[in-house]
Length: 420
Image (cartoon, rainbow, N blue to C red; front, side, top):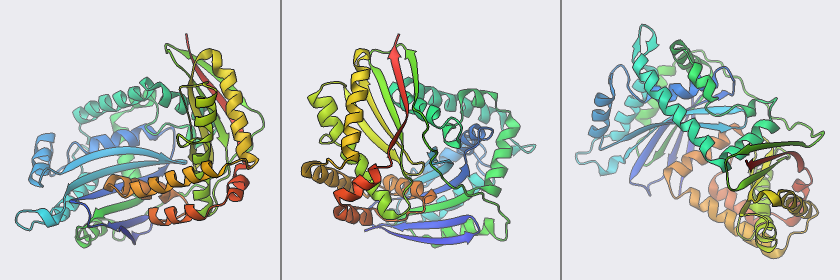
């Protein structure tokens, strides 16, 4: 059973420890939360990649790799997430749990010191990051951005959200745009590093069974008496005045239809979970309304699924369809949404959705990365609960509660990606 302990290091910096003795590995990450900004998103993303190449103590990839090998083959990697209007820049590490070292070494303590060196004492040349490091990682980041475009389902979903939130921070890509990454000056990477350390909300998370006290002291020593500023964003759901429709063409065999809806921002933990269950009933399982009726009975699409973003109050329904069936599919999807809003939910649909959600909550606890992701994404929300608490709440949710929340659903944007 995982238990989470939260301690404040200083204003805007927290140390979270999730104790769980089921795993043979431990995980330690530093996560920096900053409001999305078109002028800084690309620099923040590239910074995370550059930081994991070296530091002043280990000034090249060879010496850093040697140190990681000495720590029983520890791993170090960056990641960029987006939660609501926030960009989350993470530097994560994983290693064998201290219980399994050959001579009683404290790998977790050394890993904490290494992360501190990487994040707080990077290799700088005349106040800037190494030119070769920046260019190498720029190429890697551009490849990752190109990969998102090549996945046409992911691209269609991304485009629908960009169009839907075109005047909002959420429209900014988690890594910025390709053009922004290409245009980055080397000086902006160092500026991003200083800005994030001074102004971002920082959550340091340790997971596993390792002793967290030394890690806590290592990070506390850096932030002691350090003034910091963090701007917290207030999420809102804009009113829908008219449905926007956008069609793009591409060289694809299977067209994509994405329908973006505005929903209510959950005000409580229970509403947070109700909205997830609502989305699961609609299109989250093979027994959902969209799957059984639009895909199976009417055979209008190859896939049809719904997903909800509770940090932004957005629900999307995406499907792969033949171009000739786009209008029919949109009509059929709309019919299922209206049935949900009117409370037409069978006992089997509700039971299957609850079982699927409870299983999803249980599955979160199967790995350290899943546990970490669950807590980090919900850190920008006013709702706080454990996966076990979430599974317990699911059982008590009623059909009437789902219908009440579904009444807020309004279609905002319809995006179609069709073949040439």
